[in-house]
Length: 112
Image 1 (cartoon, rainbow, N blue to C red):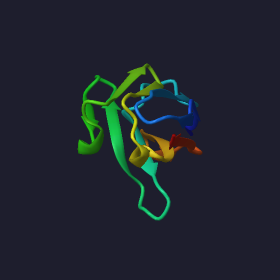
Image 2: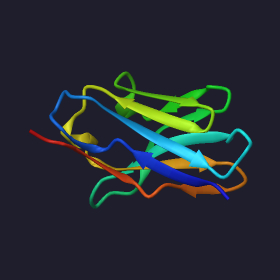
Image 3: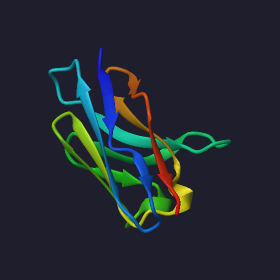
Image 4: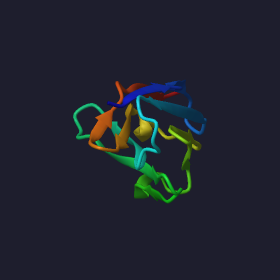
């Protein structure tokens, strides 16, 4: 069983930066894929970015060039730069290992 704990959300002005962290516990093995998804009010949860254990990354078109996903063993990070109001959402950490795991979510609000 894998547990995911997120941190780093908050309120930031447009153009600002935030860094999210997701620490996975409960597995002694490298988790296959870790990623971030987000859900804005009234919208479905959607992909932000993923990173494999080998470092291969994948990004949603809307965040390419602004967000960077990385990981150190079983901790994943999401560096978010040039934030826009439309990035406002609850951000969920995701891990794909023996099954799919989700974190509890962290709120990111981009507003002046």
